[in-house]
Image (cartoon, rainbow, N blue to C red; front, side, top):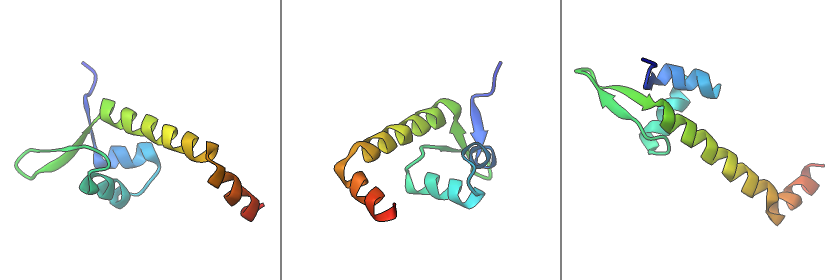
Length: 77
């Protein structure tokens, strides 16, 4: 049976961010996760991470399509 959950270290690696950044995403509630075990280790469901990534793609598409993005490009270019 394939794994259902990822550790925060695995999440960090998948997103190419630091472990501290992955932890901050979870603690802020931006990335839903659960605590399991006696030591309360965080786990993120793989499908939840995929939904999070797809949501970020949608946010980026909306940002790029907005008129404000054109203004930013003009300032940077």
